Amino acid sequence: MFSMQQAPIKSFYFEHGPKAVILLHAFASGPVDVRMLARYLERQDYTVYAPLLTGHMTPDFTDIILQGSPEKWWQDTQAAIRFLREKHFSQIAIFGISLGGIFAAKALEDNPDLVGGGSFGSPIVRKRQFSVHQTFMQMAKANFSRYHTNEAIMTAKLDWLDQNVDQLLTRIANFTVTVADALPKINQPYFIGQGLADEIVNPASAGLLRDALVNSQVSFHNYPNASHMITVNQAHKQLETDLSRFLSKLYE
Image (tube, rainbow, N blue to C red; front, side, top):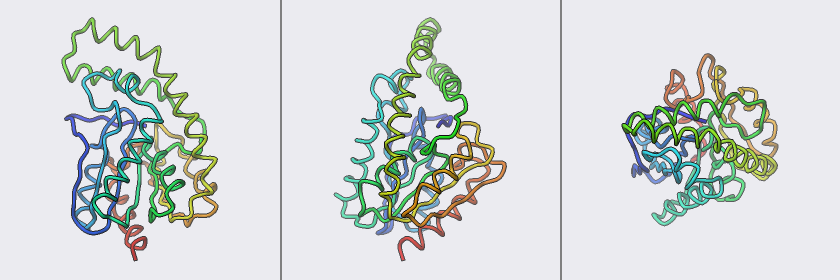
C-alpha cells in the first residue's frame, strides 16, 4: 500500500479534454504515485485530478494516524468527484493504486453515474497480506530523516507509530470488508492491474477481486516480475497502454 516519494507533491489537476479521470494514491504516500500516469493520460486528451488524502504528505508521519482514517479518505474521494462535477464534467472515471483502489471501488459502488474505473495492486478482496506494518515503519523513518527531524523526537514518534499503526490498519481492513461485500453493486466496466512480484499485496487478491465483480465487465491485467507500485515501476508503460485502451472503449 506504499511508495516512496522524494519531493512533496500536493493534489494536482491537469485540465485537458472533456473526459475526466480521478486517480487516488497509496497509503502513506501521495499523488506522486500517479503523476506519471496522469501526465500520460493528459497527453491522451483526458482531464486528470489526483487529490491528496487527509494526513498524507506532511513532515510528520503521525498525521496519517492522527488526522486520517478510512472515513476521512472516503470523504476525500467524494469531494474529488464533486470537484469535477462542479467543473461540469459529466463523464468521470475513477482509479486508485493500493489503498486508493479501495476507495475507487467504493465510489463505483455508490455512484452508478461514474462511467467506470478500477484498481492497481489493491487488496480489496483479501488474501494473506505481507508486512504492511514493517513497510510503514521504514517509510516513516525515511520521511522523518528527509525533513531532518531531531533524532530524539524522531525516536519518540517512531515508537508511537510502532504502537499505534496496527489500529489504523485494522480500521482499513474492516472498511475494506464492507467494500468487498458490495462489489456486486458495480455495473460499470472495471480495470484490474496487478504486479505478480507485488511485495505488499498478495497477487492472488486480484483474481479474487475479478471473481467478485459478478456484474461488471472486467479488464484484467497481470504484469510479470513487477512489484507493488506498477504506476511507477517497470510495468508503468504497459499499464499506461492497457489503461488507455480501456478508457478509449469506456468513452466510446
